[in-house]
Length: 172
Image (cartoon, rainbow, N blue to C red; front, side, top):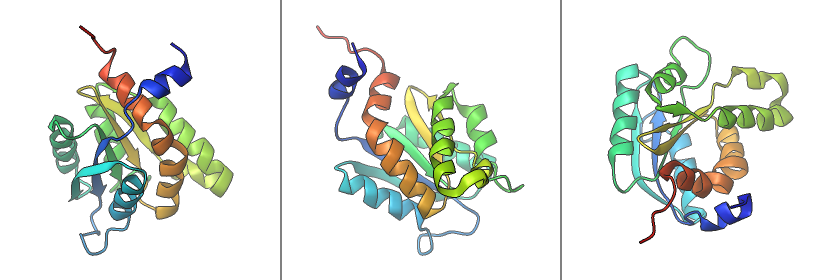
């Protein structure tokens, strides 16, 4: 089956978990989570879980594990904590948690970002991977970066990613 057939066979409306990772944001000041939720809803998807957790290994791991364990979540998006600052532990936490990594996600995000911000894209540690046969994508916290990731990658490939993570359908 070719790429276009895979895309056509992929689910069209997905159920997302959106997890904001921040030591400074709360429900009133979080910009990334609402931006993602609004963008996903506008594209016909549903956000079934929204959460804000501190940039702490145990909180990130617990939140992501809870999200992937839910039957009503197809794909998990995190926002924040992907920089190089000492408090940014999202990348290392998720990398250790994943069953397998999707290296192309971070590579593609940084390539696309380079076109907009140049070499400063080196500061991003966006990462994607699989956990319990569900896709988890860790995005930066800035709305500009989220817009890029959502429009250029997530909305275009989410269904395809989910279908591939689930594995082949077994008919009959």
